[in-house]
Amino acid sequence: MTGGGSSDANSKKIAAGICGILLGWLGVHKFILGYNTEGILHIVLSFCCGIGGIIGLVEGIIYLTKTDEEFYSTYIVNKKGWF
Image (tube, rainbow, N blue to C red):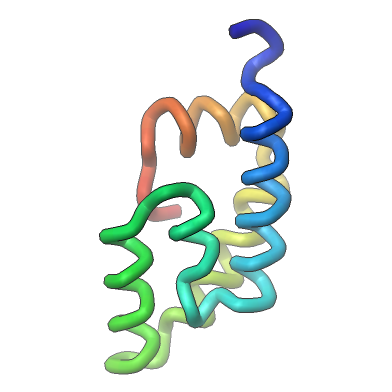
């Protein structure tokens, strides 16, 4: 694949970033990226410790500030689950 990703990866980047910022406490951004285990853990952290919203906000901002190539490499190819 050339160009450092696909339009599907770019769509996931935008959707995960926005959901991370707006719905971070629910872990929706994790499920969008296919990280089901991390998504469930994120929900548990939200209800037990109350830090899920902060993590979601930070991750949403990180997703949106990465270039398309960085996002694709980090979260689609290498499957980095956290930050």
